[in-house]
Image (cartoon, rainbow, N blue to C red; front, side, top):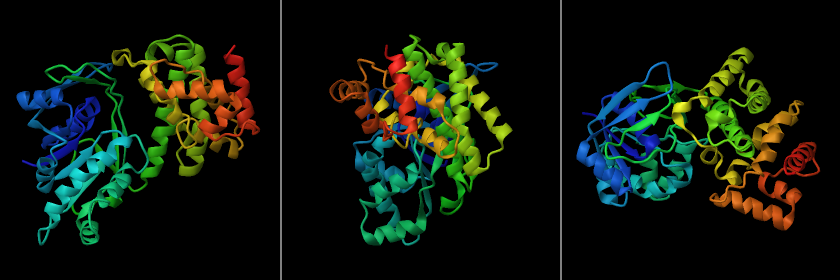
Length: 384
């Protein structure tokens, strides 16, 4: 039986990538540090995935699974040494922590005279996450092994999209997901034969799909969260039913889409249909996705290269002024969730330095620029 080693046994790991690997006939070895999840995996050797909110609920059973503690480097390395594919869904900020174990596995693998090729795919909400993981792994390999890894080890970048809201861990490890899923991988970065995985699509123009996803799904999700929080909604599906929110977010996505169409040649009508599909996904009540979860960490999400500011800045350069994106950015500065450390840092900056300095410090947008002026105007209007 083919073996996949997957880092991250949380809801996304089990409900998305782990599911697809299992459906493709792989034994899935989950690497995690959560003892409760690992114990359940090793006790049951299976779990259920429920697709909810579609025309009908679908149930999948993922079998031939087990768990291993990520702190046990030697044990993880042994699994990687004879694995057929390695994947990760641990969050972009955690890639550096899984790199040493991967490197140890590659050392064993690359000591063979003719190693078998292996592909390692980071399935993260970030641009070129696999390339970033490769850099961390190579920091743990000497020059000779790096040269050998260049021949036999691929790090294909990917774009992933599936909404999997937080859920309580139960002994059965059942996880609920939305019906929509998209996993697109750069076919030019594989080494050897490309693994056959159900639901894994290939492209030679990955950046277009990564940016389409981030600057549509993530832009709209985040904007809905900030506007929904401001208007007192608890869940995304409630917020998007508000006519004002729906119209603002739809227009914001059209503003964001203008640069995607220009840069990557997406068909305008097809992209409008994609936007409508995204908005429809937000309406799924079965997901019970809270606005505080979706909007969390505004310090990152309001960054210059992230989901709101980058498409807004691009739109300005293209001559399409992003009034609705500007409103979403302003609302991000009003996202003052008490339990959100990043949100409270922003509130502290506003209190101590003023909104003008906070705007430039957090987003990189000058308060003197036209975009900055629009964000400030919206903020001052909404902050009353």
